[in-house]
Image (cartoon, rainbow, N blue to C red; front, side, top):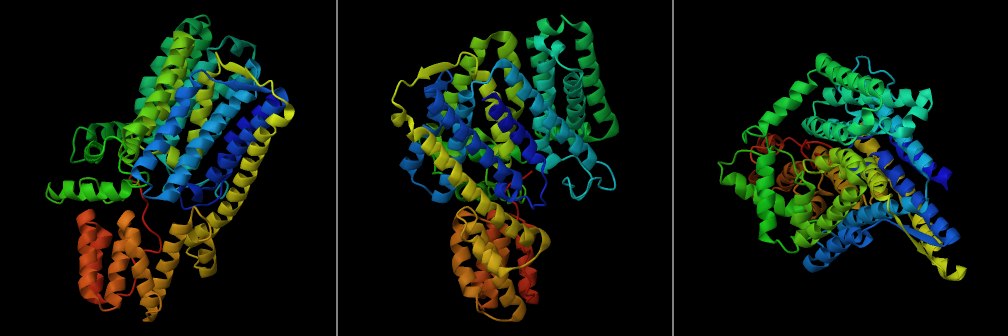
Length: 579
């Protein structure tokens, strides 16, 4: 059991480091997110076998409060209706798969030594992430093809986003400090001691060079908290404590001295006080107004983009039509609580409050020394969810957060002995086996589809057969359909034909009602103009500029209509989140 547990942790740590070129844009276009779904399913599969073999179910305290999270979200969805049923299904699947992964970790009944080893494996993975981020800052693109490299040298890690990198780097700092404060650290090998101390230095260095304000805030809050909680243990070995402080100061100091990341982060913090320079105050105000409109059950799962941009247009028009929130399309208000408040209302929020209450009660029972330290370890990703959307970009963050939550709830866990006939327990491994097989099948086909879409998005390889085949994938169906019709419309515009233009118009009009994708307003206007429907073309542009004031791509449509230029804005839609 301990070996299987360590294998799961090892794969969770290793798989994100395996690099495949990808365009980003969507979580399942990034291969490691697909792989990690399979790891979660494998963990659940092993847990089902262990429950059947040992006839015992291991559960954390406050299990019912934890289960309130999906219940609240399901109830709110049925009350308001499902605005986007496929989105709702995958959103709920991610939550349920995550919670099953969380509960599965208890079934391994890993001993203290195994848990300790698992933490070292995670530290090793975080160290490698830090090394990759450092290599990304060097000229010449070292290890090109083996690790991702942005267009301009900067630290973004395997996640290709500095804030998402920064939050796990802060966890590397705090987890290193926690680990070296444990009594068993002194008996560990020199290799593991070196690993822990090196991770502390590298991760603190990377946080400083990312330019992430949330990373900086998380570091400033988490490090003093973990030091205060573990101070009694740290002062017993002053040499080790002083070495840790020296490495932390050296890492952060080196990051400040060798890059402008720290100054960028502090400058971004200053922008929060100036609404003219930062979109978030406006973003949160619009989101709060939407919540207060329907506070009980929300606007419906999958409705955010539609209701947010309609309300944002009213908000911006009342303030002179200035693009106060930028030009990006938002699929998330960059605050997890507001997101669920808008789509699921207070019913969804009650589920989140329930699991938060369970966690705080468990931390309190652990006492200040352990509970305070674990709070510091959970803090970086928790803070990140309140300003961005890490769980929707990185499955690694979701599973790592759940693993850290498991470390919090493992003490005081409870055993439920299943004194049933073996035949009565067969449905448990049967269900987990079915889940594993279904997940592997889905992930295998989705991986192939994502590579086909990557060739189109990243390398501009237009293969209509592959795009049409991608429409068979439930997850990518709508996205692949849009890309296919965009490519076919481009053929009509460049060749002067009208084979697909009306089909594109009919489909994209419906699509824009729930997903106001900016380049599609531009392309729809050109499609109308191509059929001689000038009034519709102008109305489309006006609608787009109402939702996205002064948007450069939509605005350029006017000039292209005048010039009758048969070119689309781009072969790919814009991203659906603002950074």
